[in-house]
Image (tube, rainbow over all chains, first blue to last red):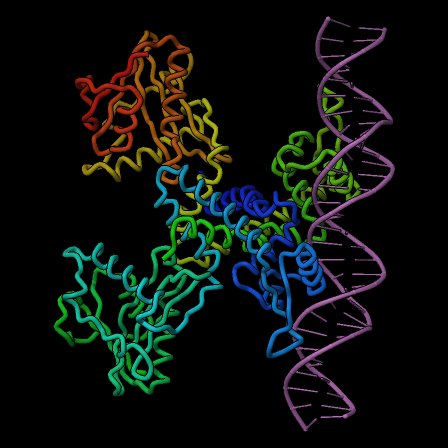
Length: 290
Length: 290
DNA sequence: CATGATATCTGACTTATGTCAGATAATTCG
DNA sequence: CGAATTATCTGACATAAGTCAGATATCATG
């Protein structure tokens, strides 16, 4: 009935006509959209004026005027940066924080009602995640993090949950050789997550031994982020980290049920090798020389 | 990691920052957004000025000025309506049509690139359909149509495809008693589709006999539209049509694999009855007295 | 400390958008 | 026909948003 292009454009129409409503949810509190956006950006922790200007894509003159109008309303104060007095730092006053909270409440209520009215909220949320990830694909950053930190733990839990869904016999972390976190941190290894606007969308671990070999572990991409080339970007990050650590031989194990992963390895220079551990879950083993 | 409200708001941020790009795709041709929107709305077949004003939510003064600026550019002509000379009809000139086509090409290219860059376009499109349907739920209209028409045939094909996916033994229309289209049209019956911005999202048939009984057939809601209460709205439309046709007894058959449908029937006053046909697919039979 | 670079602000201006009260012309209805 | 209603247009304004060329203060560097 509708070809792909028509479906995307239908989506665009749907969001633009609703997004009027999203954007103007910033309205209705007697303040132009520009000023409301600045107030909200400050409330969300952006304080550096240059950062604000960049994030909101505003001209410096306009930015300056918007800030001053918020100052005149008594919602914001600015003071010079302690290191560099040319730069200015904006902060919400108590009244400003109240205004910000009011906007937050509005936005949350709107989001809440969208979910509450829907009969299959989980499916809808998954769809929204996927669209958000696709739209924001150029803003997904690969960051090296502590594998014991919040974003890493979130990814690992999702990864385990997915394995237990996809393996016909289920998956139990306890039965698998759980890599010691210290092996996936400098100076022996590394751990990376892919972050999109605060949400972790994927991860990979480089588990070193302190010698010149290492293993790739825990490669995972969120279902919402499949098709964005995240797996490849994560693997690249891990390989580059390995090179920096003077590692020359990488190995990994995987399961033939994970077809996408296998395909990725074969396309990026990995070669299949014999089983090199007695972990019960993997049935496929790969190696790559750096 | 993120609660539902945070996920919706993340979606909102993703689309608003991209939708800037969507909306301003209307820019870059030296024309303010307002004028470009009017030109495009006319190009898409809205010609009545009042209709345009309503659709674009513009003040009548502003609308008038935008139209005049397009006329001065030689892109649009207006003439009085033939029935009512107070109303005005806007039409694109040849130059206007060329400009409109240029915008279309831009929009199509943008949509195309979004899909082309994605590794799982079908999943992404399904997600976009779902979000578009949820955002536009208040604009979904139930319309009575000819069951042999384009939108009805599209729904029926999707319906058959879904049955063959969901029935363990598959589904072959030829084996089922295919209702004669004439039985699903006035004066014996009716056929309804749910339309959202041009896309059919669901259907239902009321198959009459010319007497005071009838059957409900082909109740279907697109996967993207599940959870929006479409099934209920379609059934209501069919029941109301039945009442108008003085039908007092409705029956239907279904399969226990279609759990949502069964649940809907039980919640809306249908009672299970004995098998009343020898169709191979259904295994559950319901009746409702009007 | 002089010089150029940087971050922000100010003034002057343009364009886009939105609002509102009539004006104008056509239509409807008693 | 005449009064009320309706659709659109016009004029007069107001505000929002965006642009750009300096002005000002501060910083980095030789």
